[in-house]
Image: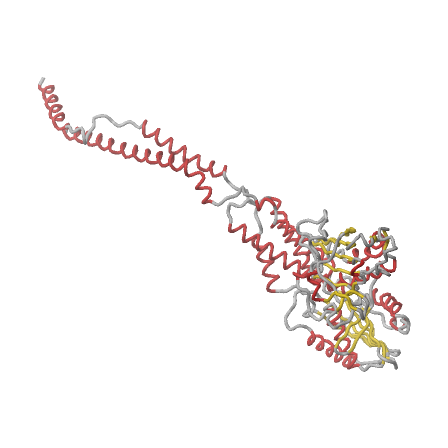
Length: 597
């Protein structure tokens, strides 16, 4: 009974000291805390799934390779190796020392004629010179002569024959000795007691025949090598890439148009199929490695010009001057852009034959020096060319039946085609005449039935390859900066493949250029540029289905932010409450243990 009374007294004493604000007799439960934390953890676990659901697919792009290509193109301009060979016939025998001195003289003269600044697409800093003396008694060659020119063979060429015959015979002799890699260009000097004659063939050689000293021959050879074979016969060293008349996709569309100014006076048609089949086909084949060229034609009526002309009694014709050319094309009436094959990045070159009305016939173009233009035509850079063709006996005759459809004669068509070819050559940056005038004298340039000689095609290939690689590098660098600046931009797998293929083609073009394979380098560079353009202008890049992280946050935060905030605050509040209740319980337990002891 005494123990029971003692326990009762202790309980009474504990009950007297119990404070419900700081103590509690029962252990706090964890159900509310577990429920609150489970809701919080469900939100946290669901966040990766939410992030995955709004993830934008981005194909990996080779940014380092793009930067490497850009650095190579910028720091090391593309250079092609070229070989130049001079063959002297009829100068007697020479020692190797004399041969080396003459070779060194030609090399130094060529170096002095080239630009001091390394030009992309040229071979001004990557060329070699070979000299051969082929006489009756001996034949002396230096060590790095191209794959093997056979001494004595050049003597079988009859240099008194017609230039075309000489050119073909030289190609037969020299063409076999050219290596498949680096291109070799040859100048043959034949010492004869006659007036000096210089001709530049349609292949990769030229010849000088006449009474000429070694010093004079070296000067002429250096100039032909540098100004003709190296620079394409141009005054400037290069054709700037922005003026190359080739579309970004590597395509050119030649649009030929016959414009009848006033069909009330007369109506003319032409046999364009004959022009395309017999005349244009070799040209398109020759330029095939530079661009993918297609041809179309049309005949238009009611196409007056925009400029005015005046009557000249002395010449008996209507005259329009060079100052009128900017206003000649009537863009409101000349509906020339009708091609359905032209893509957004294809280049269209227009060639128009303008037939004036009877009240302005004949119509002649007056050049700045006051003379009448021989071709009666002109070009507009990056647009095309125009020829004004006045019908024969075009003065108005009221008794004639003007409504009868007539055809341009074959002779006139041939003349028109020749003018068109001259204009096309000018649009590509080449000269349209057959003379080369240098410091040491002039030379006759033989024309090719393909419209472009082999050495001109080499020059265009080098310049075109350089222009394409520059454009490819610029486009890929722009794409790289754009993609890296927009981390939420969609990058389709197709874009990644196009970029990779573009870089591979660019690398192949550089490799071919280093080996001197001009045509293959131009083709690979064209492919590289086209693929880079396709990747940059891919429809998915311009899509509105991508957005920045800030935009994504603004879209989802009105729903998730309030809910998440309430869940987090509830979890923190419940955790705080649980700690407080547990502290109360521990306080009661401590006091109980102290009272029991």
